[in-house]
Image (cartoon, rainbow, N blue to C red):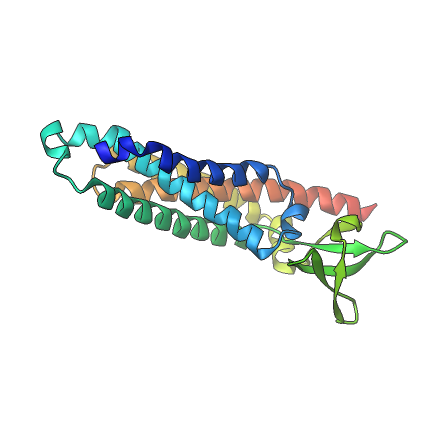
Length: 234
């Protein structure tokens, strides 16, 4: 512990750099993220996973460890190696859970594309991705791909992808059944989480959060679909 305490500044400096990356991109819009290069997205993702891992390790070091080990034993623990292992585990676990949550959410969520509009404000060039050197890869309606420069000087329009089965899902009665089902499953999972004391407790907590997130996503997109249909019926 003395090693960590004596070198705390050397740990805080890189953490501060990662915090700056996240703060600079905290409120970035979908369009801004679409125009980011792969390296910029990698920086943001790396900063996020590192800060989550550091947060869990700090919680363990400051709260859990002092309560679970007496002072005579703490000095004998290879703390740096142990906390490094915890960091890898927590960061990896967060990565896997995030991918699982996003996979489940994307099943019920509409996706959007961005187009560069023409002089008549009609979608013209599909934005594929941003690349290095401030270039943007786009595709025309004739499936011709090209790089254009100065992407921030262009005008864009957000267009929802057509997903027939998902539109039918939100326009049918099954959406209300699904909302009710996910809400009940979330409540039941949370009740079980509160009343069991085993290794399965964390699993039921995750199920509770997942079902609640799906409930919220479906509810938001359900209202969005109703608004979308009203706008296109005019």
